[in-house]
Amino acid sequence: MFSFVKKGGDEWLFVSAAKILDVPFGQRASYEILEKYRPFFGRLIICYKKKQTYSRYVFKLRSRLKDITVKEVLPDLYNGSHFPGYDQVCLSFYELEGIVKRRPADWVNALEHQKAVYLITDKSNGRLYVGSATADSKMLLARWESYVSNGHGGNIELKKIVDSKGFDYIKQNFQYSIIENYNAKIDDEYIRSREVFWKKILQSEKHGYNKNY
Figure 1 (tube, rainbow, N blue to C red):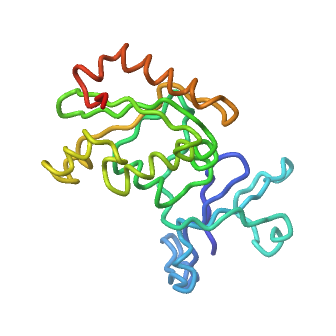
Figure 2: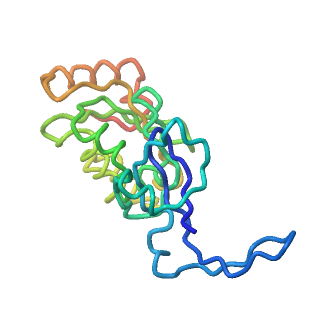
């Protein structure tokens, strides 16, 4: 028995494979997990369009193989986190780290070719850092990857926090969101002008972690 759960649309997540040993009358079946398939539990995603005329969700897999394609094998267990839309992005450090390490296709596609003005919030004190992702920084995904790697992404003020309070402080308290996003064709100077605008609006130089040097 191969078990799948529906992710959405025509995508299904492989969750288990087992050999049925016995089905006692009136009792739950006894089974044995097929260990050779275990590395793919929670990682293998298939595409299968359920036929409208076929109402059952239990069927012989062999009869459906010609209609099934493998979409991807995730590098880590699927955690149910979908890209919610640019205006809904609000990530803890650990959530961002998980995206960077697992590289789910929907998040990568949404972020790797986008320029943006983004916001980092220190939840422990409310202080803000406004940053921008341009072609120079290889777009938003690459910019955020730099924060995952060292906590500060090369910013002087954020590096001071890492040096004085440790990387764990960043991991426990920092939150990442998007203020504005733009496609790759928008001029970098315009993105930087919007960064300056939001620094002024949010007063992140006076009361946050942005500094002019």
